[in-house]
Length: 373
Image 1 (cartoon, rainbow, N blue to C red):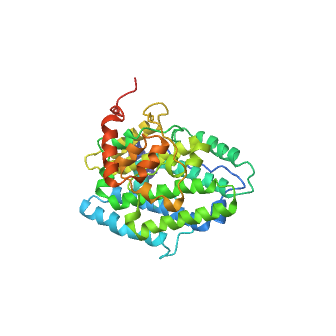
Image 2 (image 1 turned 90 degrees about the vertical axis):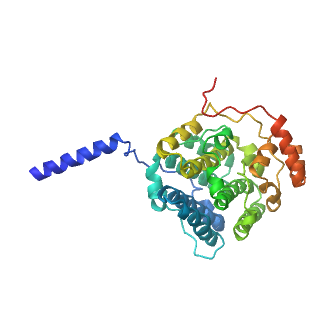
């Protein structure tokens, strides 16, 4: 009995110390919204669904390396060569594909421990991604708009997990101390992440097609174009794709869903930046500070208009994807018809136009760390 007493006392002391350091965070999982369309994507578009499973695994493995590998001389080849080649083999069918998407804790246990609330937000929004794909894939759903809005309403019942329904400012991704750290050090895998985002967005555009045969053709095209990027990495995107460009029909039909997905993708880059930046010593608190900035529905909203492009055929989107981040941000400020002209310019003409827009096109952006007036 005396030994048992001391055992309980020791457990209590350890628990109290861990709690004092914030090591214990409430863990829970929330079930997706039940519907007859659940898992329709897996049934109707198995190849596309397999790519989504690999994307989930690749995201988790990447974060795990960034969190656990302390030696940059080792982390760069592990990510840029080993991990890239691993996911490329899976995408290209050179290795047996995963049958399902495992939980993040399975492939990235240490990353999940670092910032659990970040993982909750990622996982919850990825569930909304899958739910929307399922609804749009299943023609037994007669009123797909209503079903998508129901899924969005369910998503919003968890405000601590849900990204805002209005587009957040790109300054959160581009104008902070850690901004760009990730893509400068890991440019190849950064392109892979942006290819993931492109596929996820362009699939929305394909799936809103009412004709099932045309929808099938567009999904197959998206899968083929995505695989070409990993067969030839020079085709990987040079900027973060956004919904109003690669899925404009979907973005106009479901603007709040599109903004949520863009915000998720923006925060992926922000999180990778702070994990990469060696000057950030307290990564957990910085991750939660950045999450709070992103989750605030009223501050740091994008003030520049995001004008939807005319739909560009999936197989013709390479000129758009090859714009660098600076060119892309400049193009966003142009009217839709001028954006298409911008895409057709020579590299030198685009550079000159980008420089002109940078100098005269908008006022200096506010530091995202400053409070709103």
